[in-house]
Length: 634
Image (cartoon, rainbow, N blue to C red; front, side, top):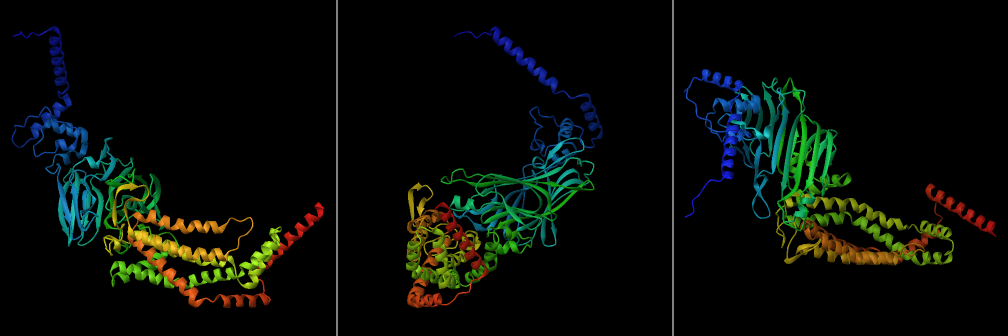
């Protein structure tokens, strides 16, 4: 057997290791100041004089490492004091460990961590997601809250790294949780939570006591709040489209960050901030507006064809003001459904965070469709309520449809005369236009009169387009084969994914596309026979033919991932419109009578209004100038 010997390299290695160990031990020796503090601590001890030996592997870089039930020796106390200053006391308490406190009522279950003192889990007890899993708005570190401030001895403190001491109590029937970051028993920074029964709104206060000599008032105190929105719906693309950071200015105006891209804003005078996750929201509401707020939103869905856990990453930074050297900021926090009726009862205009549309579109939704649908759905199943509401809307708009169809009928009757004018003045565009306008004026017809009724329907069309994706009442309500009217219906799963279409087949968009095809066939056919082709103008006939196929295709492709309730509305709406048009054509409008009325109007002298007279004079002057130019050339 070969004898093992130490060579020169091994000896040198051991010597170097020994020297390094000696140097490390020397570096860990307490300084004279630390020895003096240690001796003073020994003299002040009133308990057992013997102290536990400090472990050589003890780290003093994170608060949790000195959070134990074991008493710290004087060296550790000195080192702790050097890192945390006045707040070292809080890290030596029994509560300075990874522990949690639960607040719970009929609708909410909140978990608050000792470390950081903020909410680490929010469970909505009445709701589940598309996989029947309970809804968690906050869970598994998707939420953070931090107050960053300077101390009088030039330290920078972040509350998310420090340990708070929890104290549960009652305020009448309300549960109160006080989380205190302590300098001593009667000096602390406090997060105070107050939960009432059966309520999604939580009282939240940030205050300090006895810290006027600890907090550096010359350095701005920053409050940071961040959240990564969990996915709760089947379609990540659809949910992400309605997941937005929304906030209200002190003038009552509501703004939003970008929908599908990264965005950031610095705003002044912010009344509240909403981290909306489509049908669920986290909203911070201060009693006194934030003087400024730095808001950011990052889109986390890089590829909508890939199943992801999160939708967007939100963050908000707001300054907190000192009063007499102390903090005292009263706020409220809402964790709950993005439901118009629930949000409205808090009287902070929180319902404005729901995207019902701007201007008249939002007004139509809030004043008409929300109350109407709430009434109908209280009597009928939700699918039937959609059908009845669609019937009501189409019947109310039927006079507009009648006006549009009447205008098209008049234009159809006048088409031969307009064609004759075009032929007669084919070399004189100005005269052709002048004669055409004169004919329209005498007959009491106008090509624009057919467009105006359609324009009047646009606010209703757009309002309903915004209503269905945001109607919380439709969430997880079934109808026929659709399991959830707030999400897409599925009649077939595809073994592959088609770009823009998805990996499934929805039936309601197919039915809506078929109905739109026949509606377009009827309306464009009527318009093509009514509208004469003007020389030098685009061929409207070809464009309308393309629209007959293009519009249903758009419905088929892009609505495959939209709410089935919206597709159901379009399907029923187009069926009803087709029926109304057939009734108008066969039983109400008589083209012979319309023709006779037009001929009678043409015989009567028609008084022109000021605008028509001005236009006629301008065209006559233009015609005179044209004739003079012709003579000059000759």
